Length: 113
Length: 113
Image (cartoon, each protein chain N blue to C red):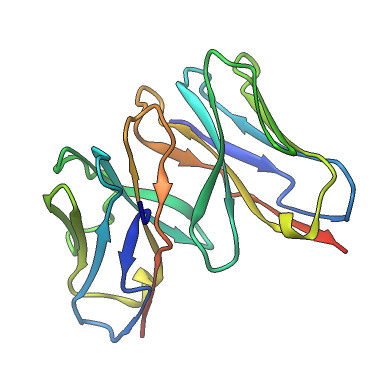
């Protein structure tokens, strides 16, 4: 059974700092890994999807990396802004299935002005 | 496209009552997923459909829960009878391909008194 862990559970940083969020998973036989953002009281918004054949994906100030062999992914946020404050979740498919996602418990990020 | 649409956005009901949650996926998406999010258990997949057919309902907690997808543009999740422990946020998501990203609706916040 796939298990996904996210560290830290919460993070508070001053505006402008670069930061890294971590995600680890137990089964490396994955098709892809996704990073989502969830604002309080809202649904999830997909940020980045990394296919298993890729090592990283970039979107604006966000960069996600994937190391299947070690079962790890990182989300790097450059020059953080107060608007980045949200909960960030990573998700990977269940073992043996590309359709069903297992979510981590998320990292709650607060960027202080 | 308007994205995944869910209704109602909020539902407050009394224990024992029937609750019906509704979802309209993004047009053309062949996969539809129902998730439940709680503080204790995080995001959990309840059931998913492919081309209107339920594929895996192993996440449905009890027989009190049922889901249908009568056509490609509509799905329901029903709880009968509802219990206080069913209080959670229920999300619907859809995707075009199991290896691509899932798009989430805004969720239905259910409170069972």
